[in-house]
Amino acid sequence: MFKSCNSVLTAYQSKRRWLNMATRMLCSKPNQRQVELMAKSLPKRMPLPGVQHIVVVSSGKGGVGKTTTAVNLAIAMVRHGKMVGLLDGDIFGPSVPRMMNLSEAPLVDEQNRMIPLLNYGVKCLSMGLLVDTGPVVWRGPLVMSAIQRLMKDAVWGPLDVLIVDTPPGTGDVHLSLCQNVPIDGVVLVSTPQAAALDITKRGAQMYRTLQVPLIGLVENMSHVVCDKCLNRIELADNLIDKYVEELSIRVLARVPIEKDVMQCSDTGTPVCLKFPNSQVAKAYDTIATKVIKFLAIKQTP
Image (cartoon, rainbow, N blue to C red; front, side, top):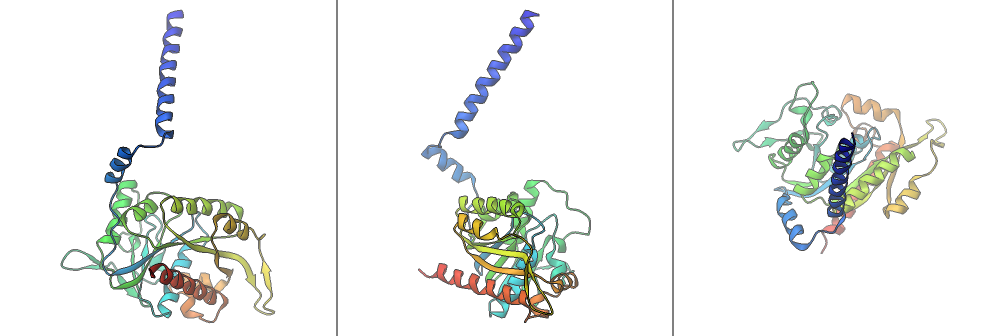
């Protein structure tokens, strides 16, 4: 019995020493050679042919209106005279085909590159156009491969801006984007709840770590405007200002809740086209104006 206890204690101490050593290795700062070796293993950031700028729309948390923002931002930028593409980066839950009223599979050219579908003046590609209605059950490497295929094996150019609608979280899709193509900026989207803002803050910190600039934050579904008296009714405490101050970014626009947005999204006609004079459409136009100005300043030497 004592012998058994001693062997267990020895095994525990050995495992403890190994864990301490591994912890020191992980917490220690890598030397120059280790940095060079890690850099060699990463893919090189290569621009997409014919695409001048790449803008990512990210939320961190799902259900905050990120895809709606990406779709209407693309439409608003087209109305400003820009050539725009929209890449649906949500492999598991693509929504762009429905919102952009697209259902056909893209064609391929002689070099086996996909030709994005065109609707409302926006070039679009989505995994929802390539698979049936069944679920996509893939592991990380397949997801990253699919993103690279949608980005680099497609005829996107000529484009002024490619908008990428990303999935919730801070996983494989975000890392694959940041490692493979130069991203000019990120538009964050969040509702005013602390639960959504906490996760959005983590996403913002991830992009900062990857040295990707943050354009600003869209406050979504924070208030409603009465149809009769045009009175503004706030639906939550104003927490956005606290978070943007902590992140040192600005609020691009405060988008209200309107029933027309849901109906337009379900029928495949973006609200910026069907109701161009609505409060929501004006908010998206403001976002587009600020994004265009940000890209122009960034491009200026």
